[in-house]
Length: 152
Image (cartoon, rainbow, N blue to C red; front, side):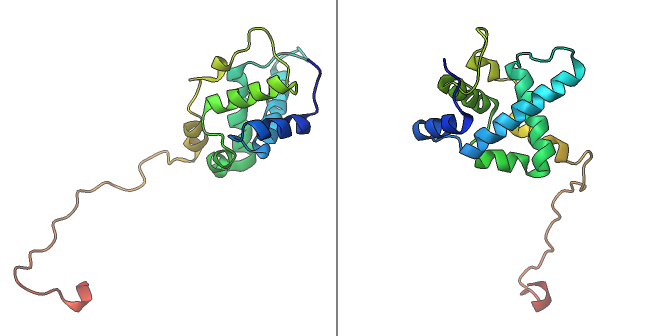
């Protein structure tokens, strides 16, 4: 298949499949570049295939680096809510010729790998219980007395 310009591929994809916004595809391309760069730091191989789980890990790391505590909200605004959404986007790009693939690649490589939302929110959760959980106190017994204006 002939290599297609990325922006043209995204236009074609979003005309047919409006689940994901163009900005989400641009983010995915940047996350893939980030993932490749990170993998190269640890390996001597310059050009190597990136697996589904590796890309998902890179997506999380890149989103947290770029958007911090807003990562889940930003990705959600682009329609990216789960690991399999990344897989759908990757295979949309493969089908249009913007991304390449190996024979072993499959959309199932992106299913059930991680809980995307949880991975994006976890770094921002408190590491300890912030407030003590107390049982609700009993309201004061009033009998037939009206409430005082200062208690309303």
